[in-house]
Length: 292
Image (cartoon, rainbow, N blue to C red; front, side, top):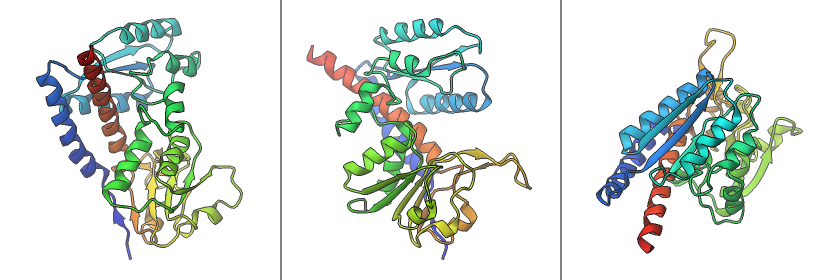
């Protein structure tokens, strides 16, 4: 039996149609939702991500503002731009593409973004709100995963969920979101002892550790839902240079009940939920101004 493929591109297209209607409704009230993206340095992968985000904005009715800085740009220059964007009422979301050059303090830069414009959901104030079960902005990748699970009516209440990865961007917020839905959550990572013992118990397995094909078919419970967040480039063999996930798709698809591919799985939904957060920010701003 082969798993059902959870097509992130198709779901993203459907969600973006709804988002475009929200953008149109805002426009009718004189508001053009706007996202500012800051890119520092020439990292090729970051440049691709930013280009995809800008393109998605344009197709959905969100205005995009892109600010490129050289690798050796002073941190103070970027902080000054963030302060300027914070004060601009016509900008609703601010995103600083990670990773930043080594001479930057990434935490300091992210904390400089106004919490009300932090559409990535990385500001400490927004992380705290999520931990309390009162999220303002949900980090985009976990948000996208939750939408994917919802689209397939995957039961969450009481489900055994194993997350492989403990990052602030995916693993930790993913756990909080699933706990809020009454799932039983285990967080593993690259140093966990007997990882397969944990993954074989999972009704839902989320792989977000950043190691190519780390999760193999024999580590998966038959019929499980497998969400592959990893994006890696294969370094050898006939597929060298091609993208792959943290899950060995070929072996996993013969065991899982539902599985996301790489590429074309979680990635498109991550960008889609960034648009959703930007529209949410614009709608909140409009409502606040209407209240006066």
